[in-house]
Amino acid sequence: MKGPTPLPIVLIGYGPVARNYAAVLRARRAEFRGRYLVDPYLVAIRARDGQIHTPDGGVPPDRACWPARTPIEDLLAGTAPAVVAQAVPSTPDGAAEALADGLAALAAGAHLVTATKSPLLSGWSRLHTVASEYGRAVRISGATGAALPAGDLARAGLRGFEVQEVRGCVNGTASFVLDRLGEGVAPAAALDIARERGIAEADATADLSGADAATKLRLLSGLLWGWDVAACRVEAEPITDGTAARAVRAHARGTVLRHIGSARADAPGRVVVALREFPRTAAPFGVLAGPEKAVEFRCGDAGDITVSGGRSSPLGAALAMVKDTLALAIDPAAGIG
Image 1 (cartoon, one colour):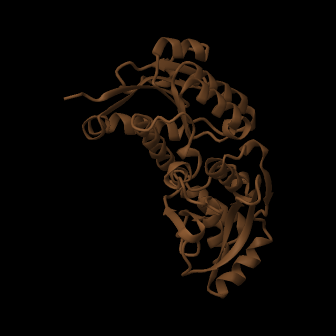
Image 2 (tube, one colour):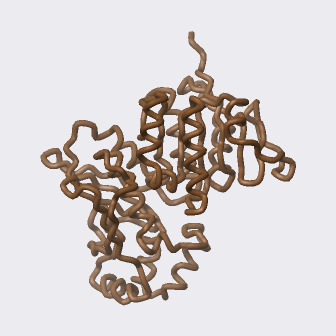
Image 3 (tube, rainbow, N blue to C red):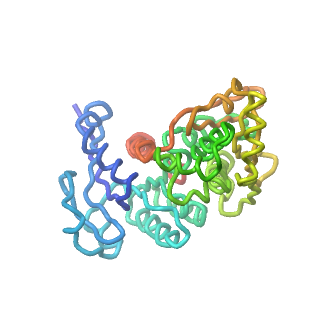
């Protein structure tokens, strides 16, 4: 009987998502070997201030003991990974390095699994072209909604369907804050509660401005219709202090406000994020609880297809990356997906 396929991995980043990814691989390695005949294990971790080889896939030493980083090309040449998993912050000042690291991984013959949005926004076409040239895959589930498998549907689950529109409530912080505003909580206090519960990051600007929702809809649109996400036009209505009164009025009517991103096949390159009102019993958006998400694909005569649930958390994003990693051993189709 054929044994499990070895899947050596270089992990770039060591924040909360990356640490959860590493922990899941260690804790469930035996399960993955037996259940999926795939043996995923880390051979190296590269952080902002150092890197470490982990040839047995074990727990790395304290980061204070890690040696300095070498050029990414040298690390890849010395470890020969089948997959490079990337989970670094999606900041503008780190976008160029994140994109360069992804391109280096593909050129070294590795597949790329990324939860980092910035290189996808700036280098979508370049990544797809290089991945196709080298026969490698780029998988991005962790960037399209943490645990929510909307990216899988957009990439492969709806092949052959005529998807006319995609709509999504894809930012858990926005939904949580809007619900608190409807209950009469002041905007600053609502955001503080979200931070205390680990829902919102310290800087929630992208969540409340609609930028994060727009990014996720851009990525889903790229998967659905082949749009160049870097060229998309975004129209976003932000959540502001003035939104509080509107949320209270909606709450009194038995409805809720949701930050909804949308894109249509007949309006190529246009992504809109707007505040919409739904009855609390209306699926899929009105019934969402806390930071849950939902994405609806409108498929003409085939009807609407919806995926919902999946809270915003580092573990959710890490599990999406694990899922992508395992899938590469089964479905390594070249290009972005």
